[in-house]
Each structure stands twice: as C-alpha cells, then as structure tokens.
View 1 (cartoon, rainbow, N blue to C red):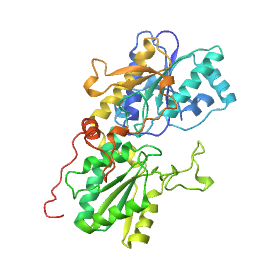
View 2: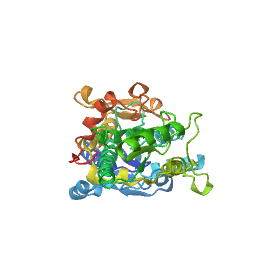
View 3: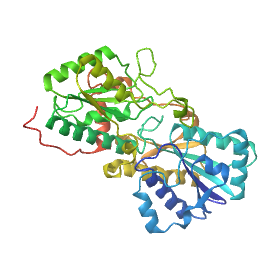
View 4: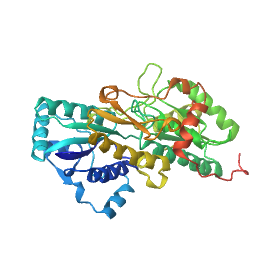
Length: 392
C-alpha cells in the first residue's frame, strides 16, 4: 500500500459476519507489498478521537481464523457523532501513527462519517485515503446489491418464523406477533415470508414500513385467519407506519433515545397484541428476537460469509490501487463477473437509504412476491424442512 499505515474502523450495529470482513481486511493489509502497520480503532469513531487503537497486524493466523468465525464487532463499535473539536483531535492522532489510509466498515451512518473524516483530514493538510466497506442487517445501503450481515439475519428470522409456526400449530395458541428490527425499512421482516410453503404455514400476515399500516384491516384480516386455521403468526417491523406517516408505536421516554437522539422504536408487537386483545377478545402473545437476530452465528448464510470476506479484502485492495472516498459495492450474483464488486463514490451512498423496491411489493397479507423470492433464495440458502401433515 505504500508509505504509511492502515487504520480499520467498525461502526454501527454488529452482525454475525462483521468480523469476517475485519479478518479478511487484516490479512490483505499485511499481505500488500511495502505495507505499513495495520491498526484498529476501538469503539469506532471514539477510538479515532481518543487515540484508542490496537495493533491488528500482531494477530496470529489462528487468532485471525477465530476472528473470521466470530459474531459481533471485535474492535467495538459505536454511534458516536464527533464535534468539530473532536475532528481536530482525530487528525492529530492519525498523524502520530502515520495513518495514510482508513477503512471504514459499516452502514449509512458510517459511510457518511467516513466522508466527513476524509474532508477534515484534507482541510487540515493531512490527506488520507478513505474507503468504505458495507455492513448492515437492514440491507438498506444504496448502490450495493446486498449488504453483508443481512442474509444471515434474514436466514435467522425466516427459520425462526418456521420454527415458531411448528410450535404454535402443535398446541394452537390464537395469535403470536413476531416483531423484527427495521427502523424505516422492511427487508428483515419481508425475509420471514421465505418460511411459508403452504397457505396454513407461518407467517400469515407481514407488515413493512414501505406499506402503510391500517389497524382496522389488520384486525379484520387476522380475525379471518384465526377463524380458518385456529391460530396465526403475524410479523411486524418495529418501524411500521400509519397512513399519515407517523410511527404506529414509539417510546416517548427521553431516557430511551439512542446516541443519535432518535426515539427507540421497539414495542410495536406488544402494541398490536393489545389491539388484538381489546378488539377481537382473543389471547395474543409477542416474540421479539431483537439483537440476537443479528448475532446468531449458528444461522450464518454461506453467501453472506463469502460476501463479508470479499468486501473486507476488496476494501484494502482499493486502497492499494490508490482509490479514496469510495465504497465497495457488491454486484448482483448473476452479474458479478470476475471481481464480484465495483467501487462507488461516497456521495452516491452517504445518507441515501434503500427501501424495498415498490415494484416488488403488492397489497396482500404477504406483501412480497416472486421477484423478492428470486433475490432472496440464493442469499439465504435452504431452510430446514419440517413434517406438518397431521396439523392444519
């Protein structure tokens, strides 16, 4: 990579394959001819500001292999938003270590932050190469066909929905609502539709932020399903919205704001369960996988693992080729070509959110159709099939 050292930063929510990207980036960073040191910033942007770093190039081959297969964010992550003074301290810390390139791994917020770090370094007369590597279970980063972390979370949620269906249909409970992550997009919740093979299978109703939620229609549809089958599983994204665009449910408690001062969105499942109890007078319970859905190593998708390792390696290779202010973007599997990726400018990614395509959606109990399934199945792989012949 030439003179100077490489810094790697992990940002945003951890995933089951985030460390696979980190491990492959370290291996590639050490392998590059004439490379300097390879450092990691602990707890994301905070580590850059505080000078809290570790020497990643000292890891043994055995440790790197263990890292490759570990969920979470081994460096520690954060949603820290630096002040102007913080950027000044950050530049000084980078100078001290002779950092000439930074690899930012993360989602929309991390790529936006990477762009700002590049600008502040340049303005301070200490330009560094900055390259981004995509990561998020939300699958909402623009310009990339898919985001490492998503397929494994999708696999977990789809298999969990199928497993939950096997439990509920065995000793029929009237209604269970499964709440998934998704502040403003429905990719993870939509993935639960992969669990359904026959009409009676879970899920029976799926609600996404991309489609407005109508309480009266929900209750009527649910009533019909319970009447027909004796039970129902409903999947709801935490960020579903009313027809006027407001969140169906959000916590108002100011002590529950996240580090970016956003209201916590969880809890819509219980809100919907209360609607069911009050209006249909039937028992309704809720399940909320929450954080475990993004860290479940046992459900890692083979394609997701491959993608995560690819983007980490490709990010370092982009730096070695002299690129800056660009993100590694995965190409569709049927168009991948030799490399499997392309580089896209930060300004086409930072702050841009990618919802489910409207042409993939329709107004139905399961709002995704064949185009969605064609996209998802190669990413998620085969789910475990079950015997259900004796029950409805």
